[in-house]
Image 1 (cartoon, one colour):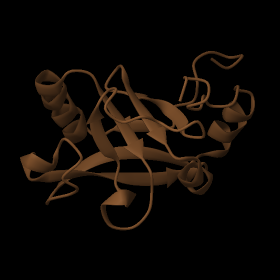
Image 2: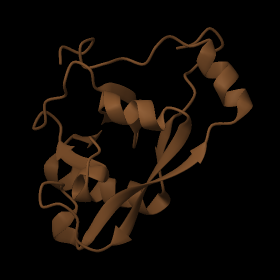
Image 3: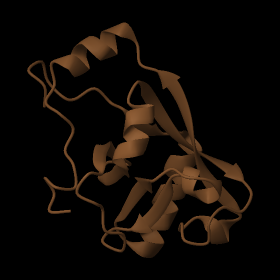
Amino acid sequence: MGAGGPRTRRVELSAAAEELVGRLAARHGPLMFHQSGGCCDGSAPMCYPRGEFRVGASDVLLGTVAEDTPFWMSADQYEYWRHTHLTVDVVRGRGSGFSLEAPEGVRFLLRSRLLTDDEWKRIAGEPALPTGADDGG
């Protein structure tokens, strides 16, 4: 929490992604997202059953989506995306076989917009985002 209330939201789900996350959670239990970057499917947010992917000490917790689903990002990717607000969306097509949505014939992707000046001002007054080191890695 910042001095003025809740943290500025850095990540959210589109309506389609929220519906899909709800279905996946009903089937697999609590979930988590991780965005690691890289080429091919590594550039898409991956959805896993919570606890089946171990975050690294330098991974950054951008926030939660779908009420209690943590969204983690690698430190390198965070440096690249830190100036943006991210929306997880869903599109048709096969993504990675490791992400839970793959058998559904869809894949998650990120849409972004630059943070506004007001959002940047609020973020400047907030504590640093938690990392995997804070969470026990």
